[in-house]
Image 1 (tube, rainbow, N blue to C red):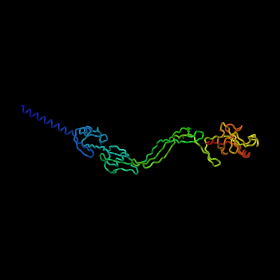
Image 2: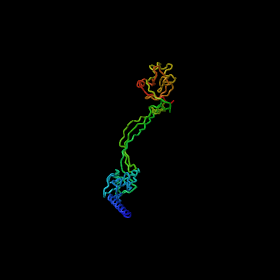
Image 3: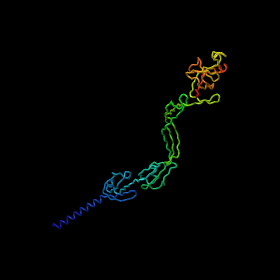
Image 4: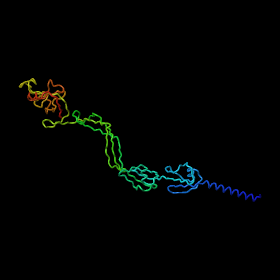
Length: 333
């Protein structure tokens, strides 16, 4: 075989080998249809799995996208791969904005997918039958009731007690106030962000408040049996007795020196009272409960401590009054 013949032979062998390889490659190709968001494309590929095929064709899937087959599934002739792309929606629900990806086709399907309850008077800015479009702005206002339970402080109250036993205007704290605590359960009705009405449905007292008690020195006033008002600075509970100018009470008879004359030199009369000067100084103006206006002008041997002897004109009146425990008010002098 000469050189020319050998060359022609080699060319023919190479052609036959190339044709065989091409035929073998063609036999390896599989027809695969990809439907991507309702757009259909036919491919011929030698790849053996769905994953390697998608990589070959640079078809990228996002995390929310969905396939009708698995990534590791073997490719077969005539296979159809359907890609359901997740579409972003700009959702505002009751004033809260967020971007949500969905594979639903209509707004009604999307509402169901998200579990959104519109309620009786809820609303959407689109028709439920509208198709989902990328970056569609969807505004939802739900009609709902919420039950909220919170703890609230119960403010303490302040009691002011006026007393003549303190200098006027001076304060004395008797009890430190303390707030209480209660649990309040409220039912609130909303449409969107707007509160429609609220109703307290339960209150439980967890801690009772403790009142603050303050005493303050003041000029107190008492209404007398004579219809007059008397200002006083102090109140004393005293044991009262009654006396007259008689010999039995004073040891003196009419006409004797000092008969009917008090320890301060005044003549005894209704309104004259005998006191212990260590408790009530002589000359002090008083008001005696059930007796009336009086002046501390007299003393007595038996009048010690919180005792007071009230003068009456007659023995009958003195006996009728008898021994009692009465309030004695030290009047503003």
